[in-house]
Length: 252
Image (cartoon, rainbow, N blue to C red; front, side, top):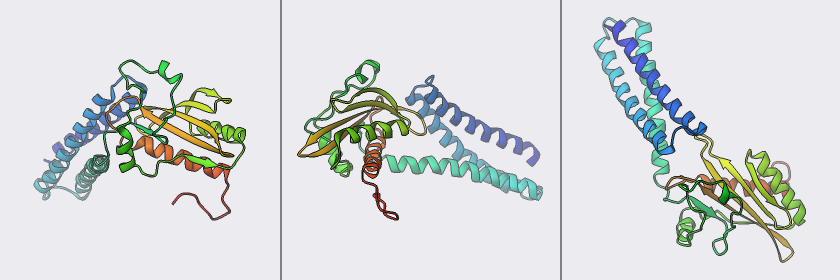
């Protein structure tokens, strides 16, 4: 019986993998909507859990007739399907604790304004108008998102900021050196979802303040992506402008 069950389990495992690949690749390429892809991935998690149970049941039924290689196959399929499903469950449990927030800024009073990004967004995507009610939510969940203030030449800070944005793989949409503004589009690591970024540099009391705003184009929640992007970018920019002595790191 194991020789009939094994191909079925193998085909089911391949189907789960193919659907997951199509969902992720489809969003990155742009022919599948994110909501559709998330629904597909959710179903692959359910399918993987069912496959895990089926594998355990098959191993129990065929335990007497299975040779060592057959048992190893059942165990391997069960482990792969279980790890796959638990991986996504863990991600969901972690992200589900985050708020429905997709627009993060370092300045709540006068958030950096998008200029040219308005013309590359679709009408169906989020508005770029900042809602002041988001400030309280952001302060609660992302209290470490703060502007960067450095004692450095304004031109140097602008050049380093622009260089770091390019080195980060972002698509530069516009740059206004005299106004200290840079607009760019970043993409999330897995799905490649587009998040728009604006950086604003201002001179203040002999220092240079760098404010940053990062906003997703779709979805109720960015699952913390924008906040992490701002924190990492400003931390890296600070490290470039203020190189730490050997053995010292700015990140905790």
